[in-house]
Amino acid sequence: MINIWEVNETNKMVEQENLDVRTITIGISLLECIDSDLKKLNENIYRRITAVAKDLAKIGEKIENEFGIPIVNKRIAVTPIALVGGAACRTPEDFVTIADTLDRAAEAVGANLIGGYSALVSKGMTKADEMLIRSIPMALCQTGRVCSSVNLASTKTGINMDAVRLMGEILLEVAERSKDRDSVDCMKLVVFCNAPDDNPFMAGAFHGVTEADAIINVGVSGPGVVKTALEKVRGENFEVLCETIKKTAFKVTRVGQLVAQEASRMLGIPFGIIDLSLAPTPAIGDSVADILCEIGLEYAGAPGTTAALAMLNDQVKKGGVMASSYVGGLSGAFIPVSEDQGMIDAVTAGAITLEKLEAMTCVCSVGLDMIAIPGDTKATTISGMIADEMALGMVNQKTTAARLIPVIGKGVGDTVEFGGLFGYAPIMPVNRFSCDDFINRKGRIPAPIHSFKN
Image (cartoon, rainbow, N blue to C red; front, side, top):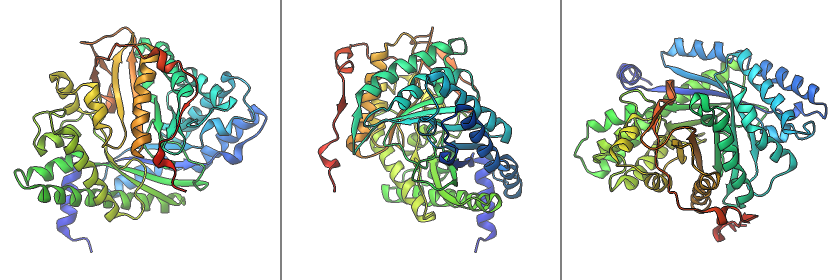
């Protein structure tokens, strides 16, 4: 039974410590929409999304009001569009019509974002995959809610270096098309190694082909709750520290479980997973970097940072899996730069470099996230950064990602404002030594030896 003390504790988490349900995400399969006629395909997609998600915003607000728990976003994830549009699309422009349809459908049901403008190309690209990838700059720059992701690598298949090279070029094109808005559309594009099928967080959410017709996934976040808990055990040993993180993560996950079950019941859609991710915002007191400082670092990036982050990530996952049988997605600690005031402060102080961030991504939940780099960075250099991140995921058998933002017209020393949950970021310096000859090789980096487990 839940007693009055626990109710008051949860209320305090919400009111004072920035606990929130970051997203309720409906995953929708579009496989039944496939048609060789492009107009018919778009009609089917619009009809399907607006039918399944018609009550998403209304139910989200009802749960928010009933339980007093902020639900920041209501989102939709769909089957990777490269799979859905392959039979009908003959050009990249054909795929863009589907992006427009997704955008209209998301707006019609009141969804903040819609993910799944995606391709899965870790081993090779079909013609449809390549057309979708080449359409991404057009699609993102003429829609407001559509998010795109491309899975470039996996532990089982290796790294598709042809796709890695192409994505460096595509990212720069997205940046150029939105240069009048500080290349902001790059925030809606992420590349993955080992992308999960059930991720509720954008920009990487898509509805995997292993999923049911429709599913409810909930992402819950509470860096401020963890930091407040750790303040009470300042100076204690590592056992106490770990137990405190684990118990706090348990409580936060139970809040997400409650919301997920209610959303599932009210929408009549099966519950999928809880993603317990310490996903920061620019709000003061809602920072993963501040948790690392509370653990004992002067700044995130100081010696010991990778060890502290590894411990934090592991204890969050342990607390989550005790609270729910269905923890999935990207659960753990996120380390985006622009969305975390503590990370921004660390970059400004010189405590964090791109190389240190890369090391931290070996033990966090995602990867190089929301990082602004100079707009004159070469496509091959961007591809090299992506390849490094893919290699970390492939070899370590974990999900890694890169969401880089080359800001056209700005360089090191400048700051870019994204607004809202996306915050602001200092432009970080990039290693300028060339990797052209490496990136311009054709083919695929093979899977590591430990991938052979059959």
